Image (cartoon, rainbow, N blue to C red; front, top):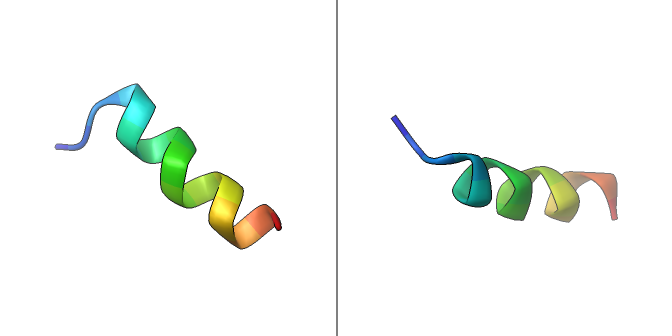
Length: 16
């Protein structure tokens, strides 16, 4: 599973 930092990275891309 991806770490919180990885999740926040892709999450911010979709929230862009």
